[in-house]
Amino acid sequence: MNLEFLHYARYDAGASELAVARFKARKWTMHYNSFFPEDAKNAEEVSQARRKLLGEIIVDIDGDDICIEPPFSIGYGCNIKFGKRFYAIRKLQSLYPGLRHHNIGDRVMLGPNVSIFGATHETDVQSRRDGVEFARSVTMGDDCWISGHSVILLGSRLEKAVLLLQV
Image (cartoon, rainbow, N blue to C red; front, top):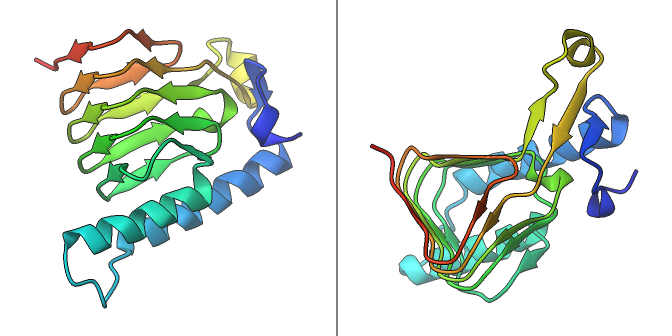
């Protein structure tokens, strides 16, 4: 099973390759969230160093102006495409989007505590016992603004310039 090309909606969450990928993502997440270069002279140098770290696990970043403030949590990391000038303030949680392609447009901004759920468990009891999960893509068009504490569920498609407000 190759995570780079896993496009099937249903999958076995207990598959050994997925367990290895989750472990790798968790290890990377711990490093990213505690990372602060001691020799940084200003905020821009910290941002540049973090962007370099993001490139280690997120393979499709369009531009060098992405900023994700820690803490940040991901399930796998692969198959997420970030457009230009993406910004997420603290506590972005993106669960298991590595199993489907997720496209985030240019100039997208996320408030604190935003959760993107790209996967879920089956509703059938036996399927849950068997570890069957399924995933669907999430798409955010250019110029979307997502307020803090928002939840974006699997299969969501936010068109261009959507404002998602949590009230």
